[in-house]
Image 1 (cartoon, rainbow, N blue to C red):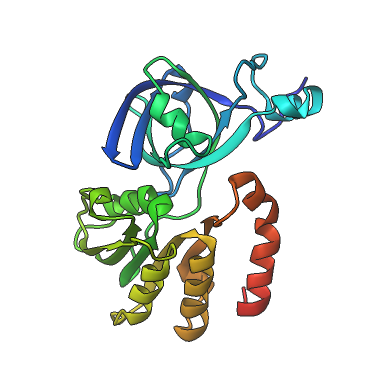
Image 2 (cartoon, rainbow, N blue to C red):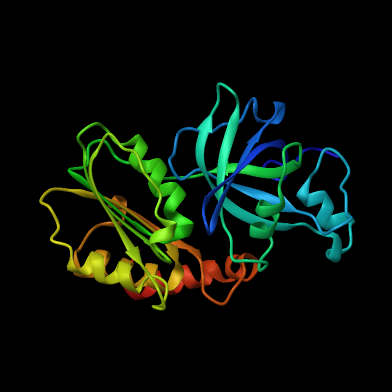
Amino acid sequence: MAERRGRMAKTGVVSRVEQLTPNMMRVVIGGDGLAELAAGEYTDHYIKILFPPAGVTYPDPVDLGVIRETMPAETWPAVRTYTIRRWLPEIPEIWVDFVVHGDSGVAGPWAVAAKPGDVVRFMGPGGGYAPDPQAAWHLLAGDESALPAIAAALERMPSGAQAKAFIEVTDANEVQKLQTPADAEVKWLYRGDQPVGQSLVTAVRDLDFPSGQVHAFVHGEATFVKELRRHLRIEREIPMSQLSISGYWRRGMNEDGWQSSKREWNQQIEAEQGA
């Protein structure tokens, strides 16, 4: 059967696992299957990892389209999207950081249990954002799901570039040391019992914007992203060409539910706020 573009899975192998914070695990993936991986253009590169149900195996080469056409639905893999925190083509290996919420979900428990030698099937990478070196300054805002992309963006910025980053996490135990050549002000916001993103909305609204053209990256839970999109597009009158902004996830939905409704959600926002 002919290969379908974008449906064939790549194969990697877990090389090591690191616990970064109490709620974030890093899984480093290597192997010959990464030799021709087309990554590096963007700082928000992502892959879609396939998690098969227990005891289910797929014929090689793994083709998600073939699986869904020829196998019962209960055997289909769960597909979860994760940012590439770092791509090291000379090894080759990719770093993928997972937020862990105990035993809930699919990917978090897998990351906790992962061990060297485990096979990882994934599709991608995709992506679309990298800091504009011509921007006067950069705004970065997101929750834990956006932290890997924010960290990658800070590392990629030109030396001395002006940046203001707001990262919301549960508490001080989730803070990570970030490196950047930019002149960056990084503020960690502790959520505690507040709704996800509430402190981010407040922080960006209260920010005294520097002069000059901003390039903004705002991602995370869809509800707060919607509020900040309205603020930046309508109240601050920033054109979409200067914004990378969308919901990575939505409270109360797993990725399957969110992805199936995301287009309608985005269309509704565009109708309300303008494209």
